[in-house]
Structures are given as structure tokens and as C-alpha cells.
Image 1 (cartoon, rainbow, N blue to C red):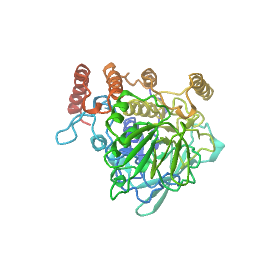
Image 2 (cartoon, rainbow, N blue to C red):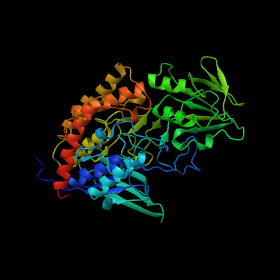
Image 3 (cartoon, rainbow, N blue to C red):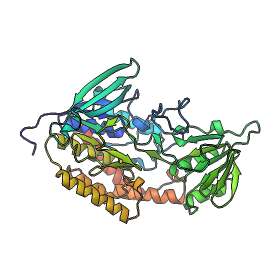
Amino acid sequence: MASETYQPKNVCVIGAGPSGLVAARELRKEGHRVVVLEQNHEVGGQWLYDPNVEGEDPLGRSPTLKVHSSLYSSLRIISPRESMGFTDFPFAVKKGRDMRRFPGHTELLLYLKDFCDWFGLRELIRFNTRVSYVGMLDGDHVVGCKDLKWVVRSMEKKAEIFVEEVFDAVVVASGHYSNPRLPSIKGMDAWKRKQMHSHIYRVPEPFRDEARQYIVVVVVANSLSGQDISIDLVAVAKAIYLSARSLDISKGLSKVISKHENLHLRPQIESLQEDGKVLFVDGSWITADTIIYCTGYSYTFSFLDTKGIVTVDDNRVGPLYEHTFPPSLAPSLSFVGIPKKVIGFLFFESQAKWIAQLLSGKTTLPSRDDMMQSIKEFYHSREVAGIPKHDTHGIGDFEYCDRYGDHSGFPHLEEWRKELCYSAQIHADADLTFRDSCDDHELLQKAFQSNARHLDSRKKSNI
């Protein structure tokens, strides 16, 4: 039951990507007054493809990045569209658009635009607005106070108009696939040739082997992006060397390497030399023109000042209760979209629903001490399992997602949805062209029936 003293809250959502959009929808549904601040000209967040990377720091070491999205042109989603989408807004096929089960990134952006427009969220969003500061109104004197308020400073980029506002709550939904995470390699700073992070990779053409330039590229890390980019480059570069932590690779990747004479697998890099040599840990070496680091991203919240309460330590954002709430600042400060290895849109929706209910008084959090104890136990369980700190937020557990949803009455994941994800992973390991050959007829029938019910419900609604 809602609290009798409930008052709608003024809530600032930072970011209009998938997590920010669904947070805005759920908050408004609960009666809160919502403002979404988005630094780009359109919704989509990471899914808003930006081909203009000129002028960006190739390794992403500058304090402020000019480009938010890390999408490359050829990227396609790795989960079947039937398993994605929000509960009441299926990622349905539309005529005249990308109708593939594993469409390109443009189709997902169009889906987010459709979601935004269907629920009338655009009126809540201030575009081209960069947040420069978020902090407690009265500093650290009111930590844990029920009436904690937040100062938010932002700038409208085109007109350079600076605004300072006070909100009852802030939801951070700014994403975590923009700030490059780089390895530490001996000689890296002294290597004179081109080095870049996959954050600014877009198309293979700049690496084309023309006029006897014989471009040799080393791709660091056998990640999904590392595999995609290596395959992108086989048609244009003289040679690509994929440097992996382990040479025990999937059957699918092994097949691809065997098909291309210019694609080679190598172990980790031992060191880099100024003359262009790349030395690997097995003693082998090559001379390269370019190194592309596909080594992931770091959680960064440069605008957020919590007086040291929330920190990022080796990619662990904490302390966060259930990856969402800092115990001493909750529920007025929350994060949506931190977890990885989940069915993203649905998990973001369950987070948003819980946050909205907490702010409206429909439910409450455990005590601060109990939340801190839960966090400590979670950290300990990860350590016992041998999971490194930098993978703290890698969930990979459908049962956890279901337990999380119980906090707000969010429906459990359907079995067909889980099985579709498992099936896609199995197919991906066996064949990197799985997106065009994945065949799950029985599961698809269940997915279509479920999505059809949601579509019928939408048509009958008056939203």
C-alpha cells in the first residue's frame, strides 16, 4: 500500500538510453515529476550510432570524451529480438525495416524511438544537455536524512546555457560502454605507431591494404567486439593478429580463423618495442602498424560528488545494494543499468519499477546496516567463487534476476526467453555466423504467442 504521506517527487534522470527511458516511464507512472537530461540530440544512448570520431583521443585517456557511443557500423545484436524488449513493448518486426532476428544496431535505435514516442517520453527530455555536477544540497551533513536533496548542474551545449536545479532524487542512467578500459603492457607508452581503443572503431576502410601499404593490425582481446572487428578487417588488411588471453577458443572462432589466411591467433602481448615490434608471451613476434584494444570499458561518473560515499574501485561501483542503491543515500540516489550479463532491457525495467515504488512509498528498503551486510556477503561470495573484482557487476544468473524482480512484483523471466538466450549462446560458440542460421522453431512459437498478447493489449489500451 502507498504511504498516506506520499508526495510526488521531483526526479532527475541522467541519460536517455534504454535504462533512462524506462526509468522515466516508470517514475511518471508512479506520479513523480520527471526531467531527463540527455547530452546528445536524440534518444538511444549507446545505440545512437556516431560515425564522427575525428578529434577523439584514440585511447580515450582524455578527461572528457566527445563521443558517447562505441558502436561500429557492422554491429548486430547478439540476443534474438524476441528475448529483448520491455515487458509491454515487444521488439517486434516492422515492415520496411531490418526484419532479421538479430538485426543491426539501427533497428534497435528505432525500437527505442518507438518506445519513447509511444509512451510520450520525449516531452520529459532536455536534449543536448550535459550534466557537469550532481551533489548533495547540504553536503555531508544530511547523509541518511529522509529529506536529502540533490543539486544538479547542467549545460545546454548549443546555447551554452548553464542551469542549476534541486531535485528530490536522482537516477543515474548514463551507461558504461564509453570510457575505454586499457591493459597495462610494457612499452605501450613508447610504441610509436598507431594505437586505438575499439571505442572509436567504426568501419574497416581506413585499414585497407592499398598502394602496397601492407597494413598489419593486432587486435587485443578475444571479446565479442574483438572477434567482430577482426572479421571486419580480413577483407582490407594484409594481416590481423588476434591476441587472446587463452588460446582455448570457441569452435566458431576456430572455423573463421581457418577460413582466412590473413587472420591469426596469438597469445597475450609480452611487450611493445619502439620500432613497431609486438612480442607475445610465447616468444613469437610480428611488426604491426596498428593495435586495436578491444578490452572493455570502465564505469565512470565524473559528474557525481557523493563525498566519497560511492566510488569506483577496479570497475566495482560501490557500495551498491543490489547493484542499485548506495545504502546511506538511498533511495534518493540510485543507478539503473550497472549490471552486465543480464537480459538488459527487462532488468533495467525491474530496477526502474523498484526505484519508482520506493520513491512513492509503496515499499521500503532494509535498514542501512542490513544493506551494507548484504553487500559484504555478496562481495565475499564473489571472492570465494574466484570472480575478479572488475567483474563484480557481471550477473549471468537468471535466478538472481527473478529474485531481484520480486522486490517490486516484477514478473519472472519466461522459460522460453531464458532458453532462447541459452540457445543463442550455444549457436554463437559453434558458428560465428549464427545470427543468420539460428533455428529455434518451438521456442519462437512461444515467443510469438507471448508478444502477440502484449501487442493486443497495447492496441486496446488508451496510453
